[in-house]
Image (cartoon, rainbow, N blue to C red; front, side):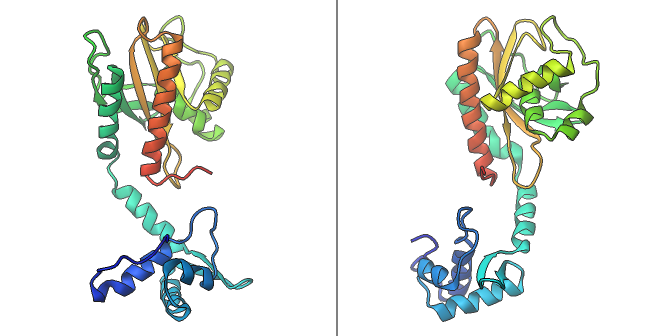
Length: 261
């Protein structure tokens, strides 16, 4: 049963473990629960469940709806969640995923974050191909000409996107999107696909696919990407790469606590 207290726990920890089991008994599809449901799921008596809920409510960890006497997670859980998220090192969380992507694709995988209006390469793992992307750790690139930037822009509120982009957009190659209207059409496609691609837009001969990492309670600020020579990453291969990066970015987002609606 979900929330069941584990056997063999120290006697003095029983109340803590029981309280934790109750806090874990509010899934997104059932945000409000009554005492009978919680007691049954946790394997506790109603009186014990009621006593624990009263203690949790006194600390703001659960709240009681007076209209139906059902409980839901309280505001203090949001505060604790935000503190936990700030304590997580994004780079440490994602590095193993970059290694797996680089090994699977033999291309270079990067973790990039929004910094001063550009995408900063926070971490990278080089691919095994002899011809590939050059080391770029610590460099920053324009949002509108990178797969990571486009993936991020597609998820941000329009007001934030307008704040980050100012016409005219810088042209890096003949294929760079420099019109805000054309970029918005591109971002619409990115939203439909769940990933972004570039081919020769930032640099001639370079292609990449990127997908946004989502975090709970905050605007997105990071993306994953895999890139290499465009001659090796033509459209079918690039789109397949995009689907792979999207799946890995979604897995990282889940590990960071993000739950899709």
